[in-house]
Structure formats: structure tokens, C-alpha cells
Image (cartoon, rainbow over all chains, first blue to last red; front, side, top):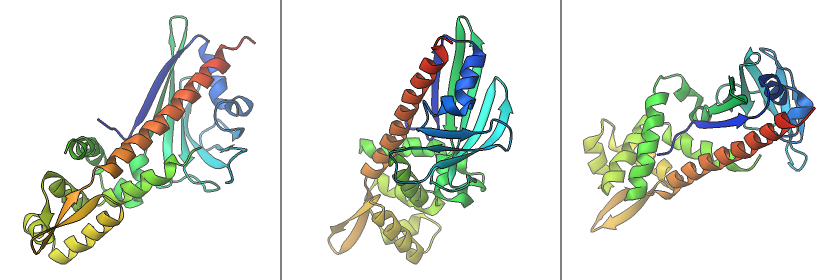
Length: 143
Length: 108
């Protein structure tokens, strides 16, 4: 069943502070997310991730929530050179938890349905609609 | 960043309308004419026709002629494609998470 949320989790054999650094320090971000990165890990902080082989400008991010070293949430514009606002962006959330021998990192990217039509994000139907999409995909494909 | 972000909103935008959603659900179950849809849904036949044309442009429905009637049916491909695109975005995250792991596990 398809879902419009993307969730990933990985166990890392490193202390939580090192994982936090990889997520928040621009020179480290540039090693896993695009090729160039600017990032200010504070609420309201702006950033941008660029791709050198991409013909478009960088994709901007806006930090929404920071709870060092446990939670980081930012909005990521899906179009280049645009400030991320609801309707043109998705929300990227990282949660870090200390586990035996290291850190568990969990990623959730949400808001794909908001990309569709900003209005639909406000009418309260998004969640139900999201669950239905998965059903419909299955339903139609099974025909 | 790949092109995956481009088509997802296009299909979603078409689906984000409740009436279009209901139409697609109905023609997902059986082939129906615009009149039959208008009987089932609280929407005028004119509005149904407009929504059907949007759905057809997005490749989500196709029309079939049955006698002198035109009926519509859902096409699964764009929805499957949407699911595939979300999968692709997920796989990008798999690669990023692996890279984060390598970076964090690097000795100082």
C-alpha cells in the first residue's frame, strides 16, 4: 500500500552528537545532500542545498524546529530558487535517539499532498485523503 | 535531485479535488457514462464532464464507446507511476541515510 509519507530509519555506530553534526554542519551536509550546502540550524534559520550538475539554482530550506541533538525539522522547497512555504515544499524531520552502541536516526518526509493544491492543505481532508490514495492505487492496479 | 518531484504534484493536483476523487473511485469500479456519474454524485452533468476532461488530460481516465454511449474508466498507470515516484524519493533517502551513517561513523 502506497503512502504519501516517506519514513526511513538507520542505526549508526556513532555518538548522537556526531550524527547531529552530519545533519546540521554545512560542510558535512554537502557530503550527503547535494554538493553545496548552506544551513543555519536554528528555528527560522535559512539554508540552501545545491547540485553542481543541476542546471537549476539551489533548493532553499527553512528550519522550523530544533531540539539539539534530538529533533530537527525543516521545510524543503521542491522548486529551485524559491522560499519554502506551504504548498511548494515538503517537511523533512529527523529524530535521533541514543541506542546501544550508537544512534538511531529516523527520517520522515511529509507534505507531498500539499504540493498539489495549497487549498487542500487547509480543509482538513488531507489525512483521510492520503489514506484513501493508497487504497485507490491498489484498487485500480488490481483491475 | 531527480525529476521525481515534477510529476508527483501534477497527478496529486488533479486528485486533490474531492469530486474528481469521487469520479475516479466510481469509474475505478466500473465503466460509467457522464450521465450515470451525474446520477450517482451530487454534481451536475456539466461539472462531471469538466472533471472528466481534467482526469483524461492527466491520463487518469480513458473513454470507451459502448453503443452510442461514451463511458469512462480509470487508468491505473499514473497512480502506479505516482507510487513509483514516491518509491524513488524513498530510495534517494536510503542513499542519503547511508551517507550520513558513513560520515558520522568516520573516525575523527
